[in-house]
Image 1 (cartoon, rainbow, N blue to C red):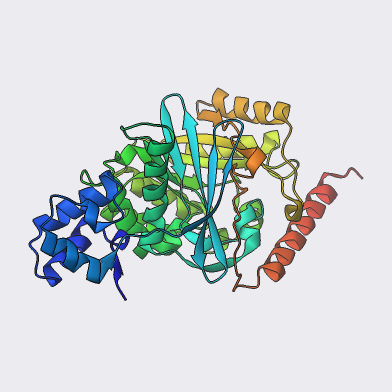
Image 2: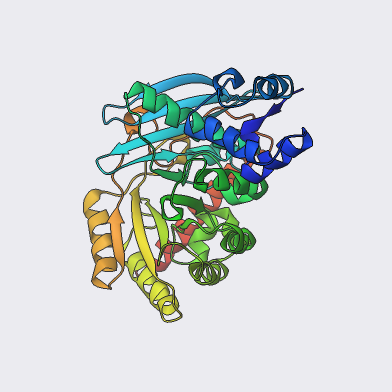
Length: 382
């Protein structure tokens, strides 16, 4: 069996070359051919000796997962489905804008966190992706888009690890992938333009700060633990106070001077003025200790099994105004690609669940209903 070179960051590729009797500078040449030029055949690498190309052909290959399908939105968004084997299919989305091109990348086949509002979580979890499967999404999309759009310069300027999966639960494979994205011999992306989104895996937030600090986005979605326990089950292990302490620590190393907090707007669940005021109090408490934040309010993209509805736009606007009036930078995310199920929270692919997701989600729905009943009873007048 030959080795897929997409599995290596530059250091890993250098070690591979040394194992095959080649000097380390050959790794840089290979790395540039693969990531900057999109080469998939060693015969294309004309500045390598013929003997080396023949050696590589016998011991290595460059291959991304098979593309199952491509979907193009009327707004220019593109979604690809990749077959990663074993009945699992993952999704990758390109979002073009006037000043940048953003690629949303998956890190797992499914997700074990099981957030109530996320379509991926309702699919369950199969396995972690390899470094090569993570990197190949960028490798394929970048070089496909250059050819498709007839461009020689870089098309993808930003990467967000916001596709299928919880990136920090696949840290060992994520880290080399991030290094490939940032390497000047690879894609040369700025740390400010590579974002890891997490539901709050506190120990891995600390490791990322030390080993590869990029922009951080935290899926918060609630101002207090009782509500977040139901929306983001990981909160039971790492509650809000622990999560925000980790954010303060991360900010010391972060390439941006703020942490982004994502907040999915769910009608009648977390979108009331009282929730906004609780958020203000929470953030002001941690701002006094040095935490700078930006809130990104995300209109929920409904799917049948969630049992949830999107907040109405006037309610979202009121919520945003309360945060803005308190001095918290707040934006409302523009929905892109919803006509091809490529919008935030809609990525699901096809996952062979190994975690009993149906039972987990049923328990969460019951917990949410009981929580709503408690709120209603407390609010009733005698």
